[in-house]
Image 1 (cartoon, helix red, strand yellow):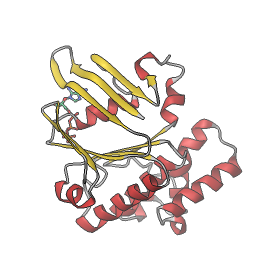
Image 2: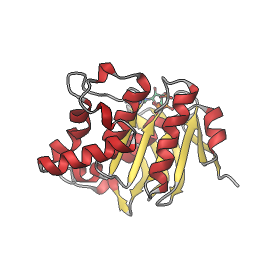
Image 3: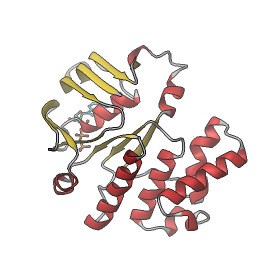
Image 4: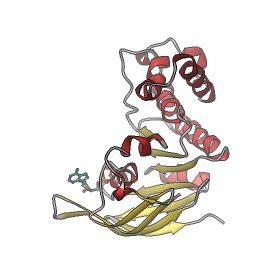
Length: 222
Ligand SMILES: Nc1ncnc2c1ncn2[C@@H]1O[C@H](COP(=O)(O)OP(=O)(O)OP(=O)(O)O)[C@@H](O)[C@H]1O
């Protein structure tokens, strides 16, 4: 599903945020990405999203060298990827329903079909009963679940999350990770960047560890 082949990323032509990164993630895998602050986790995810381009090497996703995508193809490419951020980036003047519907509105999905998919997605994260609420009326953990519902409303083949539990207490963090495991169980490839080592150790998934822009460990669980 994802292949990094000797990937390097320099910002501003000088600073090397990632160096010689080589790994593969198979379709249907769930993988953690860990490392200290500044190790390069977000940069690696941004390369997969094609928000950045590698300075060296190749990034392949679903068999395609994504650096070769024509700019007109990029929006279609990104639709296969659901993204969850730490600060979830909800629109605070829109209801939960409309926040989750946003990606479908942008794609011009027909209204009734969009409503059906939004409700299915909210149901999966346990927030169907809050569809009419505004984000401000929800707790931090619930807001993060709305962010996840929005990320999966397109049924993406690949789900990426960048520190999705950063602001949450241990119990809510565990609940969020369980949701990712649920999506993985139904076939979604999942990659979660996190520095919550205790949680990662408990969940026992393959873990890629970055240190100063280098991949220093790739640990499968037995
Ligand atoms: N757009 C950019 N321009 C210049 N330098 C950048 C840019 N984005 C990231 N960097 C630098 O690249 C390095 C890796 O950053 P990155 O955000 O990928 O790390 P991270 O592991 O995600 O860190 P954190 O956990 O703090 O988010 C850092 O030193 C950062 O300052």
